[in-house]
Length: 176
Picture 1: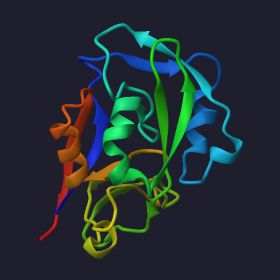
Picture 2 (picture 1 turned 45 degrees about the vertical axis):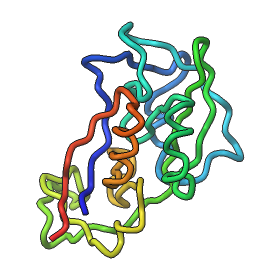
Picture 3 (picture 1 turned 90 degrees about the horizontal axis):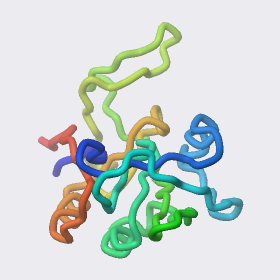
């Protein structure tokens, strides 16, 4: 089993930004807390013209997916996310609110950079607890829920098989 850090190919595909609003305020909402009941679709706009993709660059803690990508990945992610509508004038895109925020790190085996306060700044090497992550196809880490989204081999394979464009995957862990 492998775990991948989900990203987007901002060098070859378009990117989105919020048309009106504050990035910081938006990022703080995506900590694994349900938002659907209060969600007001936000307006997105293209910030860099380039070819269209199924996963345009946005913010790392809340991927944006095309309707096609949501349809293809729904069987894998449905139990772990909320699919939040957006306002975009060209096509239908959704913000993915990842609800599975896991306490899944083996802290002794991981390499962690901390602030002076002791809070985690970032991971230089991830060591996951296999029994925890093996049940999830998409998740976040409880210590850094606004920094990154992680996915399973099955998720990555579904993206590749479906020929969805714009995704990147950084391998961050292989089970022993």
